[in-house]
Image (cartoon, rainbow, N blue to C red):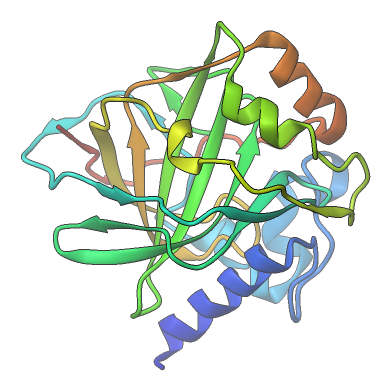
Length: 247
């Protein structure tokens, strides 16, 4: 395992632990002296948050039309547990779900939520977003972002929200019968660019795929999430000349 893979593995370990602390890291938050503008100064292991040139999220405005490979979703496994890590509500997955893009397979580890969305489209955020975090065998991360727009109640979220832990550090096992694939829109065209984790340690070389079609969520469902988690959005970051592809 090379240095980049070690750093990536450490980042994934933090994501899977569902905690505000990483090895050698420090407590962080979304506001005040531990907020996003200070992340890079809280710990040496968070230095990429201020020094990186491929940081996420970004505003998606000018894009380059190209023949992006289709995302082949294989979300067959059921979710294992739902937890409140103090920063988001996260659903950890059983093994067996994946996406394949351009012949490369990324295994689904977990998905979690932000409200409103962290990426913006032409300067506007969606009402909520789910980040589906995947990892390939070589350690590379691939994150699929599913944007939610307020409308009718989302039946799959309704099943998950029944178990939503209200207190940081709490987690609950999920009952069988929740189909994660039902959180995806019918059309899966996407925006693609190279970015980073949107939380410390802000590790880069993350393969971002932001789906263009939104899925519905009720205002009450967004409010229920925001009541438990409050603010959990990192501001958009500079592009630094990166190309955003779309299909």
